Structures are given as C-alpha cells and as structure tokens.
Image 1: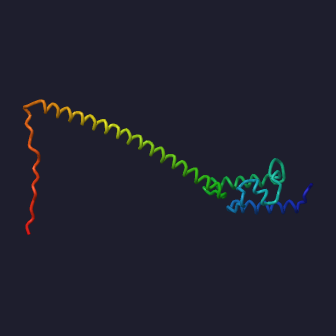
Image 2 (image 1 turned 90 degrees about the vertical axis):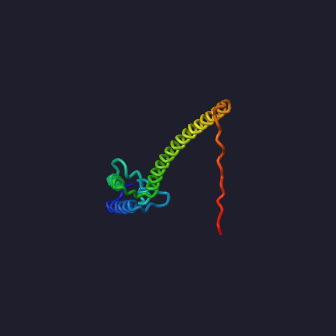
Length: 153
C-alpha cells in the first residue's frame, strides 16, 4: 500500500522525534538505542529503514548520530552504559585478582624459604650443642641473674 506525501512527512517527523528521544536516553522499557526500538517508537515498520526503502536515510542519520555520541564518550542507552561500566569494572577486578594471586604465590615461596632456613638453623644449633657437650674444653657460663629492684617509700 502506497502512502501519501503527507503521511510520509508525518512518519518522518515521528521518526525524527523518536530519534531525538532515544538519543537523549529516553529508552522505553525493554528497548535499546537501536533501529528496532526506533521503528517501534515511531510506529513504522522496521523494514522501511533498510535498502532503498523510504526511511533508509533516517536510519543512516540515526546510526551516525549514535556513533558520534559514543565517540564523544556519551552512551544514550543506559543499559549499554551499564554494560560498558561493568566490563571496565570486571577488567579491573581481574587485574586485582591476578596481582593478589601473584602476591600470594610470592608470600608462599617466602614462607617456604623461611621455614627451610629455620629448620636448617635449628639443626645447626642442635649439632653445635651436641658437639659442645662432647668437648670438655668448653666452659659453660652461668645463667643470667635476675635482680629485683626494690622501691622506697
């Protein structure tokens, strides 16, 4: 069915108004900032935006304006902005997790080395005590004296 020039102009006006709403971030529930939602909001068949159909130039304009906003760092679709934010947060958390795992590995290695050194030192002390006990020329020093300091009243 053919549409009149007046109907086409009205459709184009509705499409342009819907484009402006979507690019301002006024996304309807269950919608996105895309051609499907644009067609639904304007009350136009989605196929009219493709190929040589009457509103293909408006699809090109809409996609260009969306791309300009995205390049400027503005994302009109709140869900897309949330997805972008969550992806960045996810990457940051993965980086923190990798650093934490590296730190844990380093500390585990350090702990293992420290325990090995302590065990070796303990063995050396036990060996030296045994050697000292066998040798009569080693004189043991008396234990440390503890003195109590009195208080004067």
